[in-house]
Image (cartoon, rainbow, N blue to C red; front, side, top):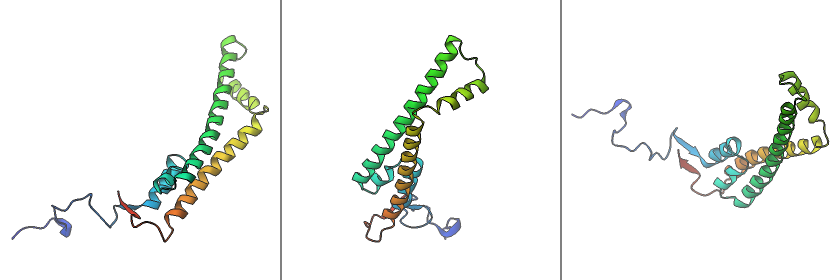
Length: 145
């Protein structure tokens, strides 16, 4: 008489070949997680919506590029003032300089770029969920995890 493993599972059954159960993740869930945790638009690429995915990726990348370039520009200006001795290496003074520089003429564009990036992120998440839950999706609606 052969012994069955605990839980009645067959020891020779492949673990990665599951077609149902708690280890499977739906495509819509993977797409939402990609859009939420990686970058806006990546979930659309997983759902094979290449046009909208590329549009979200491009818009979000341009906004993020602008934000990062302005942050680097501001950091270099403060570092230069520290190097020439106009600014003492003190955290309170540096924070004051950062606050004062953000009131500059670029502040409105920085707010716009931030809003565009956040909207792209939210649209990517919500739209991936919506597309993934459509009833006429491909039969590959469930991918093995």
